[in-house]
Image (tube, rainbow, N blue to C red; front, side, top):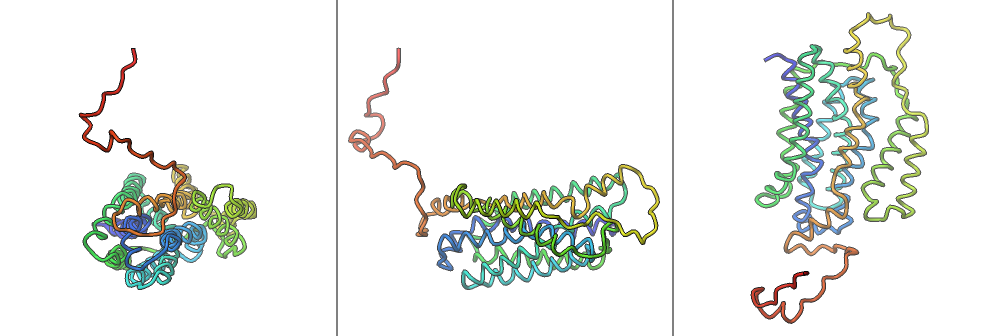
Length: 334
């Protein structure tokens, strides 16, 4: 098998690992709560800390990859994510687990922006590239679909730490394959420098927007905190973004290429696909959804706040007295 297909396998494994961590944790929340004696607020941050950092730093990770090399950032992100998974699985307190989840989000933000860009740089054939992108997309969708199943199986039959330990062999295999098959690539049209203020403002915008979307249902969409988060996101987004489109004028003009290839390069550069990753990262369940998970599990005594739904009406005497066949049938109109 050609080296480029082995590169696709390495990228696919890393993609599967990061996408799986988006939702595999949610099903194991009751088990984690019982083991670490976490409050609802602590459980929220076990999930939200990963999503916040992941979505908030995607643009920064993409820009760094374009400047310093996608292969280099792929290795850095995979190592950080794998080691953070080990720390999360060994966590003995809520603070350690949340800290490990923050580092996991950092690793994912460095890793994920490079995956599609590496595929675009590796598969130059117009017939093979769509197939490679389709495989990569299918792997991400499969990870999102299998996450609840894997999390449920582990929480029922194994220690909850295995929802993070399963990332270790996947990350090691991905690194081993990439070490022998992946070539370095960069965005040659981008400036060879980092726009630090622009990266900072874009990260603040994504962090604020992600926080508002995650916590809005629980805190109230019109609460001061959520409105302030939306306002900060809008303000930061209105400021100049990282200047990644200016070409290096010192280089000679590149030869003309096929227009279809040019359009594909513009669409699937590291920067061009980050919005989709950010939206998928925010797809984790809301606070209310995690409360429903806790209520559905017997024996969980977490301090779940009450909802605004009306109380259930008490049963009547006839409903308590016997089976339904002794009750009077409902009257029929007409």
